[in-house]
Length: 168
Image 1 (cartoon, rainbow, N blue to C red):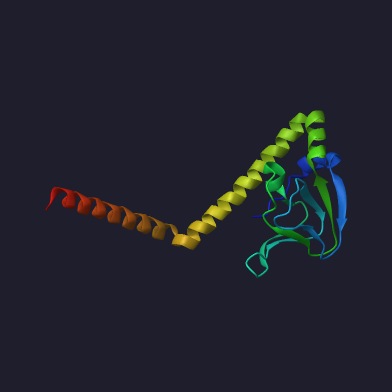
Image 2 (image 1 turned 45 degrees about the horizontal axis):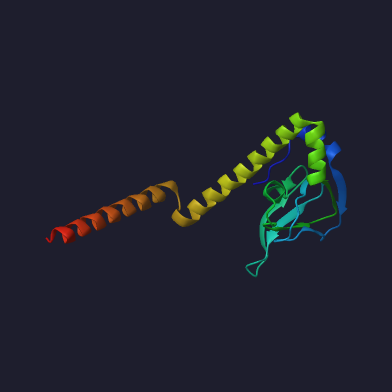
């Protein structure tokens, strides 16, 4: 799920970001690395990928206005995927220092930015949840049937235990 930052918000936070130019093939983030920077793409295209299973699995292709690095920015955890430039590009970068500066000088904009990031993370989590449910159970009807089957199996187990305890 690619989420583009609203132009009005980007125009307000750009003053608190540094710029970084990248070349095609340059890795901006390595999976499992540490870092608290968040990136907003101002030019170019970037591949979010994970090769930990032995094959390079592309999670997303990001374009101008899209953001990445938001999870580590928010919670300080290691990076969950790698991000590589698919062509020459330019990024706006916000780290802890820039964020603190924005918070002290423009708290209202900071709140808007955090609400936007919360929406990004929530949206990506919803997509991941839907994908897991689809993978595990197929469509919604299959999910209901599967839960129905589980309920019946549990009821039968309870009946069997009750019969065993009653000695019948």
